[in-house]
Image 1 (tube, rainbow, N blue to C red):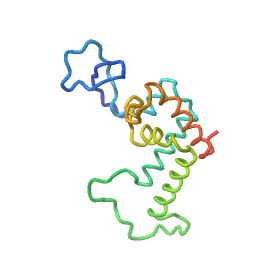
Image 2: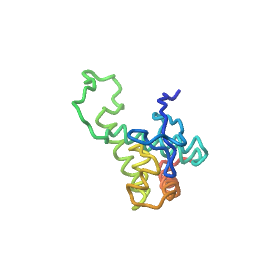
Image 3: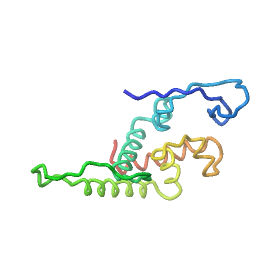
Image 4: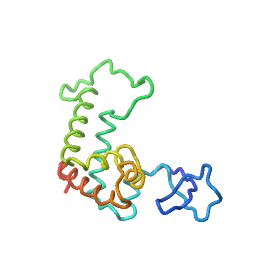
Length: 159
């Protein structure tokens, strides 16, 4: 079950906006801050199951590869003894394998598509924010994201 962190946001033509320092609201919407942009698009029928699965696989590899910036010391438990399975990968090997899969998927997406893919899937930016940061026209990001996710689905062999 997904965690719910609900907040009230002003509804603007660019999408929901934070209410900090804003004049009295005309229209508002309740948003779930814990919901990823990818989940939001899938839940509302903008992404089919194949594209959603590709995005989730990419995000999982990004997290397993530990590519997110670290702001503090790592407190992961240190493995002292092996489990007796010589074929099992060590934590470092799993991290390296995830990094290689992530890099391969991003390369499969192609030049010009990796930016929107990373921003929405890995960084969790909403489409309006990603479009603005990339200086793209409004509502163009969804089409480009779908193209990128289709290529990533092919890379992961998701049918």
